Length: 259
Ligand code: ADP
Ligand code: MG
Image (cartoon, rainbow, N blue to C red; front, side, top):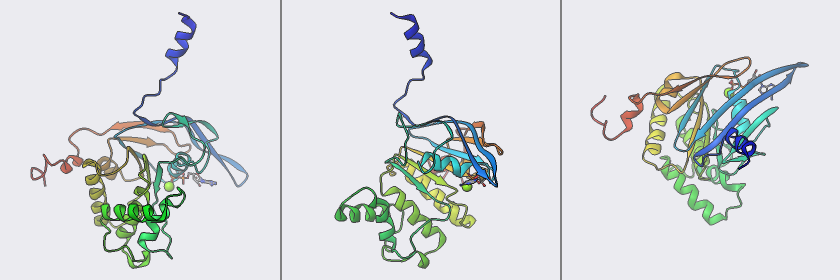
């Protein structure tokens, strides 16, 4: 036994198989008006299988920047991002994103928008259609396949956004303030529907990261909440959401006992 080697091994954090995402020491700056702006500084976070994690922070704290790094759309200035135990280099298969402003193609129907989620994956036309219809059905959009986004309410449009993300069977779902463009009641309905699908095990997702500045939403949706400071963005607190939080309303055992 080589004691030195053994020590080195102990010092390295082993990759546990339930780790979906592991971020260590991520920094990211931007040059703005000839000044260097440090947006994220030494961000560390781990997402494990079966978790919904919230990223809570003020506007401008770097939440979207962090999501874009995880989505592989931009690179960190420093630090490591491991996805499924391997360093991330660009957009990874199995990572899908839902945007605040839905980001639908206005010239495409609901069905075509959802199929577009599969375009980059080289899936054949038949399978694309089948999977898009299944995602549309799952998210409660059946009957709207041939509608255009402009004919839909905000809530229905965001359902299309969800269907387009779900159609790829994502391992990791990233959501950037997915409910903040919706009115209070619509947001609540959509949050509840989504959580319902998640708790019933009907979503093909292993882990979810939700960016929000709404603490009530974070407590309702998440198992764990990370709080990001501003200037620069740093994870300054981690909150484990206690057992008896409102989410248990979705548990069949609680149905009828609360409300
Ligand atoms: P949040 O999503 O928390 O509101 P963002 O990640 O969008 O915050 O932005 C954090 C900061 O980084 C802001 O000050 C923003 O102006 C700046 N920023 C984001 N993207 C860029 C960019 N491409 N170029 C310059 N500055 C940027
Ligand atoms: Mg943002």
